Image 1 (cartoon, rainbow, N blue to C red):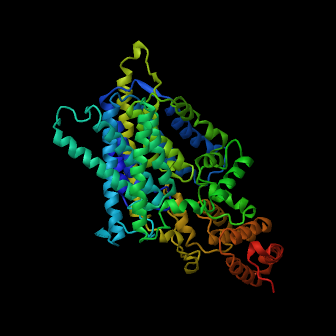
Image 2 (spheres, rainbow, N blue to C red; image 1 turned 180 degrees about the vertical axis):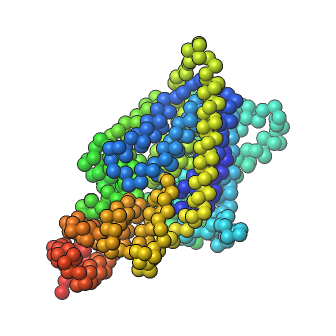
Image 3 (cartoon, rainbow, N blue to C red; image 1 turned 120 degrees about the horizontal axis):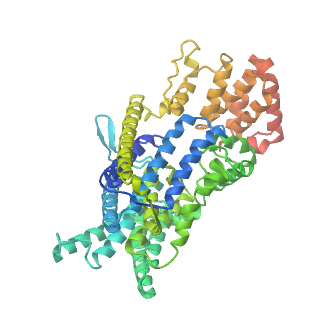
Amino acid sequence: MGMAILGYLLPWHSPIGRDFLVNSWSFAWIVAGVMAWLWVYPARHVGLSVVTWLGLAGWLGVQPLLVDIRYPHALIFPIGGLLVVALLTWVASNVTDKARLLTRVFGAAFVMAVLTFAIQIMQILQYQIAWQGWIIARSTANPTRFDGNFGQANHTAYAFVLALCGVLYLLQQAFGDGQLFGKRVATWRYRQVYRVGLMLGFVAFSIGLALTQSRAGLGMAVIVAVVFFAVQPLAWRRKAALVGGTLAAFLLYYVAASWLSSLGQANALGAVSRLAGGQGNRAAMHARGLMMFAEHPLTGVGWNNYMGASIDYAQRFAWPEIADHTHNFVSMLLAELGVIGLAWCLPIAWVLLRALHTRHSCESAAALAFVWASLLYASVEYPLWYVRYLAVFALFVALIDQRLYALRLPAKMGGMGSIGRRGLVCALAAVLGVLGYYVQTFLARNYLDYSQFVRHENHKFTDQSVPPYRQIWGFEPYEERIFAMRVPVNAVNIADKTRLFYNVMGLDSSQFNMLAYAQMLAYQGDTTSALRYVQAACVMVRDRKNCDNIDIDLGNLARQNPAVFGALYQDFVAWRKANPAKTGLTPR
C-alpha cells in the first residue's frame, strides 16, 4: 500500500480514462501486496464493507444489459479496480497489528508529501525536471495554485491531508507509551529527533496545503483534527486542548503561507479568501445529476454516461457547462447508477453509523478521521472514482469495521482454503500480466498526448485516405476519440459515423462533436434531434458569441445543401430569436 501511495507522485496524467497510467502503478502494487498476503497468511474473516465493493462491481457488470453504455468493454477497468479494492478490504480485515499497518501507510504518505512539498517549491521557483523527454517534476499551469505532480490542486490537498492525518497519529504514538519505537530504537535522542521530524512535517504539510488554495483541503484538515481526537476515550478537556492546539498551529502556518505566497496581499489568504467565492457552477452540475436520477431512478443513465446525458438538460440552465461529473458523490451515484448503485453503499453507511462513538483506538480514530475527510472531499470533487484514492478510503473503512464475519469451510474441505488462496494468487498474477499489456499499449499509442484527442484534422482526410480505426478491446474510448478527429463529416457511411460521434460525446461533449453529430442526424432526416444538439452546442459554453459562429456555419451548410439543412437552419434562427438572452443574439 505504501508503494501505491508513492505512486501519487507520478506526473504522467491523462485527462481521459480516469488517469489510467498513474492508477495502474497503484493498482499493480495493491495487487502485489494482496498476492503476498494471501500466499503467506490465511484470510479467515471478512468485513461488511466488502459487500459494497463486490456489489458495485457486479452492478457495473450487469448494467450494460439494461442501459445503453457507450463503451461497455471499457468497464473492465472500473470493475477490475472494484474487485481489487474488495480483496484489499478483505485482507485488511484480517490484519491484527493495525498499528504496524498504519505506521507503514502513513510513513509512505509522509515521504510522498515531503516530495510533493519540494516539487511545490520548484514550481514557485519555476523549475522543472525532465529526463529523456519524460517530465519528472512538473511545472504548474496555475501560478497561484501549486499542485506538485498531481495535475489538480484539490488532489494535492487530499494527499497532504492524508499525510497530516498520519502526522497526528504518529505524534500521538511518539508522545505516548513509546511502543511505536520497539526494542530496536529506544534511545531518548532518537525519539526527540523523530518527534521533531514529525513536527517539521506538520509545518511543511500545512504550508503545502495552503499553497494549493483548496477550500476542500482546508475543510478536510479541520475535520481530521477534530475527529481524530474527539472519538478517542480521552477526557473532554484534554480533547478540547488537543483539538484547539492542533487547529491553532495548523491555521498559523496555513494563513502565514497563504499570505506570503500572495506576495503580501492580506486579502488573498489562499482557500480562506476563496471560501467566499461560491461553488461556481457546481450547483448546476449537482442539480443536473438529480434530474437524471429523477427520470432514471432505478438504473441511472449508465456508468460514464453523465456527460453525454447532460445534453438533454442543457436548456434548463443558464450555463450548463461541459463536465463529466457532478462534483458530488451522492448525486453522481444516483445519476449514473441509480437507486441500485446507491443501495450497494449501505453497508459502508452502516459501518460508519456504528462508528459514531468515543471509544476508538488511536488506529481506528485515524482511519475514521480520514474517512470522514474523504467523504467531505467527495461531496465537492471526484476522488473516489480514481482507484489510487479509493483504495486508501476502502482500507481505512475496513480498519474502522469492528464486526467481522468468520469464513469457515466444512471439515471435509479443510484443505480447499489453502488451494483456493493459491489459485486466487495465480489469477491475480494473470491480472498483472494483462495490466502490463494495457500499460504497454497505452504508451505505444501515446495516449498521454492529449492534443491528438482535440486536434481537428477532419478536413485533411477523405473517406478513402483516413487512417483505419484500430480496435483495442477496452481502449475504444481512446481510439474512437482519435478517429473522430480525422473522419470526414459527410453522408458517407452515415450510420457508422453517427454511432461514432454519439459514443465520443459521452467523453467529450465539445461544440465540434455536438455539431458533427447534429450534422449526421440531419443527413438521416432527423431534424428534430439535430436541432436539439445544435441548441446544446450553442448554450453549453460560457461565451454566447459562439452561437454566432454556429449560426454562420449552419447557414453556410443550408445554402450548400438546402434539402438537408435548410429547415434545420430556419428552426435554429427562430429559436435564437425566441431566446435572445440565452443565445447571445444582438438586437438589430
